[in-house]
Length: 183
Image 1 (cartoon, rainbow, N blue to C red):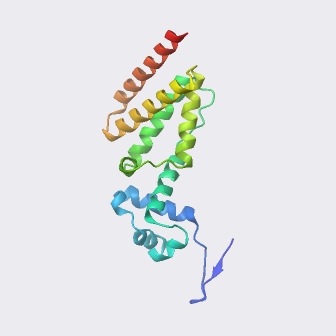
Image 2 (image 1 turned 180 degrees about the horizontal axis):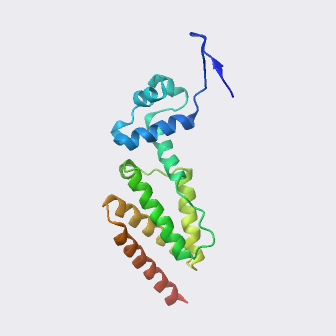
Image 3 (image 1 turned 135 degrees about the vertical axis):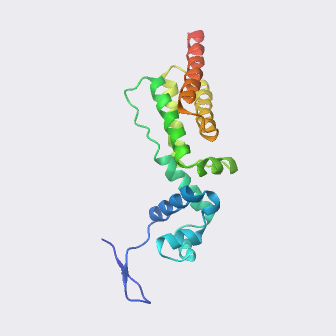
């Protein structure tokens, strides 16, 4: 274990890691939304001053971006072996569930684009799943964006799950009809 001695008190403490800061930020965001996220509150939760966080995180904005990416990184992608429709439905349901668990994420996404590495990984995986259906890259991109928009919109509207499933099935029926027409 890596422990350091503080110069002023002579006590030891574990060095703060960026992951700890981000996790504390996610908890604060879950508790009270974007307005609840301040460096002072994160620092207080971690037992340090808000100013000390700036050694690890440049700004509140950067912390928000890291929190968003952390949440996107929790979205499961391992859907190997599932038919493409089942995989797309599972990914859309996972996305909707993620937005319901972290409602501040919806607010954050409406403020500005939040495309970190985890979001990019998710979107690329969904695109690949759509392409396994036989869609061209351009059609797969449009289908993936439609699915993401529908899943996020259903979370924003607090649409009950049966209606979401019906709506996604309808979108995928249209995708399949397009595939059949092009075949």
